[in-house]
Picture 1 (cartoon, rainbow, N blue to C red):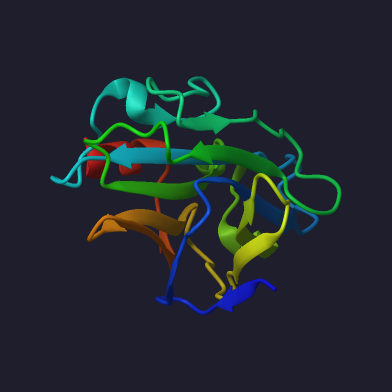
Picture 2 (cartoon, one colour):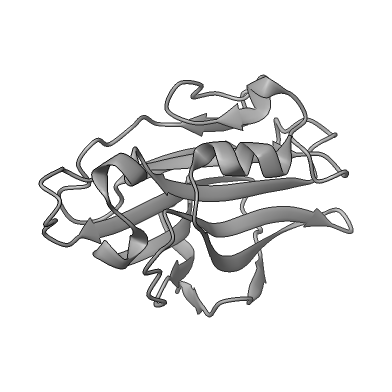
Length: 184
């Protein structure tokens, strides 16, 4: 049975291969533009910085150099139930330099489209075992991010040789470039 996490809560990840599922629904936009939310991952070393440009995983760079992190592709609409975007993780392949993987969702062209996470609902991140498809944990973002255009949903990090997940749920008024600036 899956563990439902609260903001700030941490949980061990015991499965060596798992999938991160990210989902959301958007309100009807009065801006006249469709929403396009994008999942991105920042693969960090022990200095909390991206190991290399190739360790920034997003819709234009789907696989990490070691093959351990694979984004399955960009969902341009978010329509339908369940996961809107997924990322496959294989910890048996992960580079020894990797200490943390930050999972961020941004609204594409949020400023020009006049959109923010206050117009997004039912946002979640979940992790499920790749072998059994059994959900391990889930974190539903319940906060109202009325001005934020990017949210760090969670992070996977290594502590004392074990991998853990932390439910972060912290928003930022800014976009993907702001997160790149933070982690480069």
